[in-house]
Length: 375
Image (cartoon, rainbow, N blue to C red; front, side):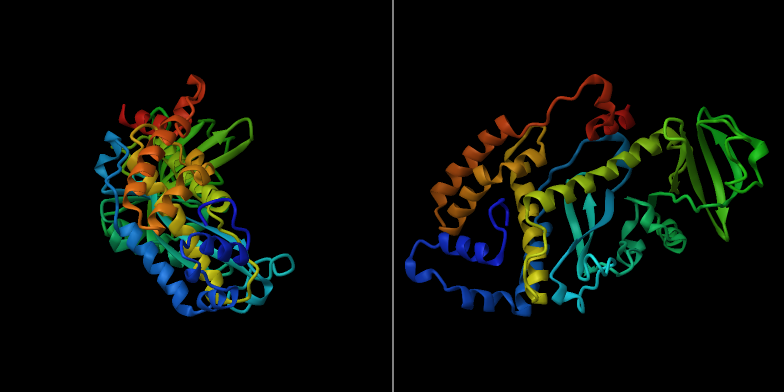
């Protein structure tokens, strides 16, 4: 699953047999398939993923401004179509095109650049129910997109001593209690207006930092006008204005893109896809197998590589450095494992470094954002 060569269950079976050093250890396709179709296969792979995540490597991004948080978490979901025979177990949102689809709901650690937990559901299941429990976010910051707006949950996070930063939707129209421009000057004329009433005609400020109220819930709302696109962007948060300026909050939200990059790596180079099978256990088990591949590749690459690692480059070339290492592990060849780890470290150092960015866009990279916040 960690390479680009497995396209179906038959291919997975061939790779399994290729790892066997003794002919008698090879198995026929039917008994192999029968083992995968058992419910215990999905449960076993899920347990392996949870174990791999628990064995964390102390790999932390250094960022002074983020040191105030115990963790910075990124939460999002990604979906993909599966065989139509699974429509009863995993109904899809787009019935005509994809009658069956699975959605994976993931919480990722920004500092560790790795998943922390994941849930698998039907594509039609509501996203908000998979948000982390509010009491687990004490002194943590969670970044999420507009699909996760839940004011009741925001209040619970606030009461638990946690923080959230969520993209706002166009439909938001809270009452403005207090407003400031991006330079810190207060705009008293906007107090008491609804957000829609405070449009471009009333206030030409590019950035507005506001305290607003929706029903009984009070929160901070930041609005920015993008002139080229002629539209507003909104961010909802409870980060204190005294410690976090509007510019810092907007820069911090850019870090959420890391979970999108992880999804891209997962789907493109770890075979998160719908295999041709109508068996629920196989479909779900292969999702966990794919995630295990991603977690282990990231952990090993982070361990052996001390410099600026590009996980996308490392994942693209996994057939070169990852599969030989897995073969040595499968064969329990301790000497080979050591040699291939050393070779992998040298290979990644030369071929999986991040590309140096132009100065004009350096502040848009993850390191640029974090360095800007730490300044």
